[in-house]
Length: 336
Image 1 (spheres, rainbow, N blue to C red):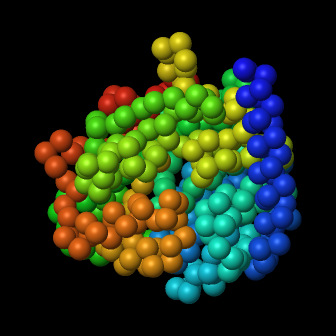
Image 2 (cartoon, helix red, strand yellow):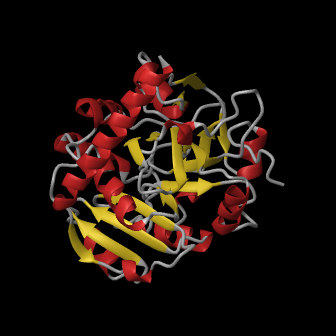
């Protein structure tokens, strides 16, 4: 049975790589600065649409963390995102007017760019509203983390997506360009998470948090997945399968200890729920470019009409990575 599964997964990986090769035709280069990439550089990859107000802080956050170059696909922005990114000296930018959905929600585009530019590099794949925190991130750069991972022969690093939200109405405080979004969305759920193992790919499947309890209270199994593997020492033979939830080859998904110990892991602080969210969710519902007939955005749009408050008496206010480790949401493992 194991041999059959391995064969099928190898075929699937080949299929996704061929698909990415074909989808490269949908990308138009806007600003190609990939000649700046040097051995040892840490690269960041993103696909986005209409995120202009978020971009200054997003780029600053990851520059400070140690990202050397950003490779970004803009999917038809009309709010100035494309123009702003094209001016950034450490950004290589591609544009596509093609269907985000038919590119497997951007995965095909990024798989191609990683195959072409990222071989041998540590790569961080994140959205503009995702902010990685990891053990000792307040004193150690991302390069220190990747050096330790290299020394430990670890090829991938897992992070749980932690939904952040404000106390009170999302529209109460406007988000300003360049602002740390966690100044507004500073609360999170410390519990309320369901975890199961995906037997085919070997990754953990995590659901729960405020999106499950507020937007999917009757069907929590339909809530978005919170498991991510955003940081990988890339090889051109690798491929993401579904967003950053899982990869092939299968061994890259084993970012946890099967024998009851703990591997080092982080969290992605997910600052989706700002005052921009109502307009964004309505736009994305109308576009219909998201997973499962946009059922997630249907749930968002329905509840947003009631001006919900995601805060509850069990909410925790974010302090730092050590707090998340104490709560069991991330771990420093044996990285001392």
